[in-house]
Amino acid sequence: MSDLYLKIVNTPVGKTAAQSLGLPSPAPLKRLKRVDQPFIEGDVLIGAGNGAKAIATLGSVLGASPANLFHATGPDTLAESSQAGNKAKPFEVGANSEGKFSALVFDATGLKTPQDLRALYDFFHPTIRKLAANGRVLVIGQDPHTCRKAPNAAAQQALEGFVRAVGKEIGKKGSTANLAWIAPNAENQLDSTVRFFLSARSAYVSGQVVRIGKAEEARATNPVAPLTGKVALVTGASRGIGAAIAETLARDGATVIGLDIPPAMEELQKVTGAIKGKALACDITDEKAPKLIADFIEKETGGVDFVVHNAGITRDKTLGNMPEHFWDMTIAVNLTAEELIDEELAERNLMRDNGRIVCISSISGIAGNFGQTNYSCAKSGVIGYVESMAKHLKNGITINAIAPGFIETQMTAAMPFTIREAGRRMNSLSQGGHPLDVAEAIAWYCNPASAGVNGNVVRVCGQSLIGK
Ligand SMILES: NC(=O)c1ccc[n+]([C@@H]2O[C@H](COP(=O)([O-])OP(=O)(O)OC[C@H]3O[C@@H](n4cnc5c(N)ncnc54)[C@H](O)[C@@H]3O)[C@@H](O)[C@H]2O)c1
Image (cartoon, rainbow, N blue to C red):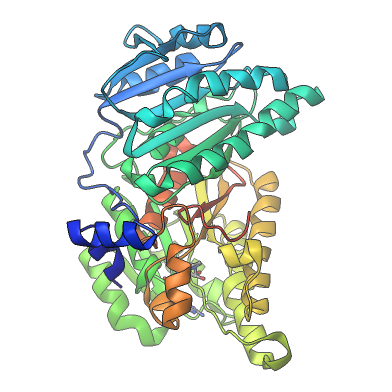
């Protein structure tokens, strides 16, 4: 589904007209063009507050990119920025300079009290206008749940409000701001998350907070195809977001088993045929579905590394008008089936060590939506399921969710014009996302280097104004 307004507003005439009428002028987002594209290029500025714990790691992750690195100098609050390593040259934050930064990265892990928050101002106030279009802001903090003292927890929690507000200020230029909260001594888990949030892969992800815990260090061996040798099951893979997930995981090296309902077999086979994957006809709400899926996996691949529960339906009606089967079907497809499939795969030991389970929630599950009590209920349940399972899974297996906002698919194309237009524009980037944007976030969760990313719900919504 194409966004005609986005195209028109980015012509010279359209831009002038939109400005004079006070209409939104969304910037075209730069998405990944080639898999071997560096995760960041251009000039990148790194800064750190006092007591920073991740600055050396950030310097080394960024040092692996072709970007020109600079570390902040000037105010005393930023003195530890120089620990970014030898590759980073000093940059006086208050200096007059012509150039633009493709990313501003700040290590706030050492901020212990609300007074320490001044370091954020000292770093970002003089530099935020030097952020290029489609630029990236990334802040690293310490997970407030792991802070023993209240002022420390306050300072770290404050980062969330700061980053979300920055995202709203820079979104009109297609730029994003995100926050990673790490557990103590989990700096070595930052690699895949820093790469994702600084890259074109996260073009439609803004205002998000991800928690990273301790895990065994597991680095991707092949940066272009990090999922080589892995097997993925993707439900609802015949079209829309599911097809993009299947294609993206295959692009990154995985063998994909695509699943969809029997009437969607022709479409599904087109998707799986193009990626040398396997197609499985199955209605996930059928009581025999978990066994059928497990039998298929056992026979075809002997096990599975990634399970992506993407299949979903909406059956909208206000609660008083909702027929019973609308309620039952929506809960069964979007929530119950996921749990039953995971249970069967675990019982039969088909989920491989260091596996990844990914569920699809929705901003409707976070904020609730008119006419969607059934869907919002199911998608909220998905969040509860993910957060609880994350504490119990063993053998390095993680579980996370993506909550898409307005994504250009057949589902959203079917919306009435005014509701569709409102959905598209009501976010910091003033446009809808693409199925690829959801798929890229799932590929980041599946990356072997994302072992510490567990129990998260990341929204791929351009920082939608709806919900948290
Ligand atoms: N498009 C959006 O803006 C958006 C926003 C938030 C969340 N989501 C979620 O993202 C996921 C994908 O959405 P989409 O827009 O690509 O939807 P879609 O309707 O285009 O695709 C959903 C797929 O799931 C399959 N499916 C449905 N019921 C099934 C069942 N019982 N067994 C097996 N397969 C079944 C369908 O056949 C279809 O191929 C869904 O979980 C949806 O709720 C989408």
